[in-house]
Image (cartoon, rainbow, N blue to C red; front, top):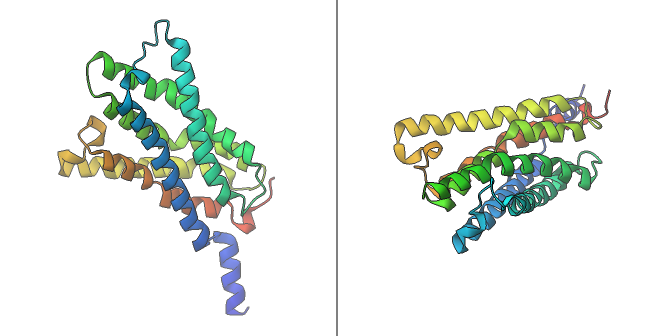
Length: 226
């Protein structure tokens, strides 16, 4: 077989495409920065926006803010990711965005809102609590990967691997951050000692891993459901 044929067959199995790979990293980076920054600016302007007691009459407001946050996350991240996914498979934009909104809503209700409320009650920095909680929830790969895999199940035989890829990227980045925190306490994001910049970097660091995995999951040789 000619060398060009071997290269084509290898590319078909691996799914590698440098252009799509870097677009995935760029689009996810933009989404993370936008979502985190909007929330951060909101709490800086008026932390009363997130000063909510989930056990009181403010439950409706809390749910409203959580919904808005989830729609923002799902809309921005989902729409930008879809621009890459659509070049490999005919996934409906609405389906992909919806797959992002669901996990985001759970993250807001179960992670972000309780963290912000707790910080407010203990007179801690609300904006810092928001950023730390949001960074962990946005990087919650297992749940997001599971939701997105249900969409990919219709177009690729490797759809289940997408769940593992998101879980692995999340665990690897968190493990690296933890090891770095042992070397320098200033890098300990898990206890709130890290900087805001490190929160952004932690999120962005997952994108090269998920990007490569996505190209393999959507490799030409893997397309088509069982």
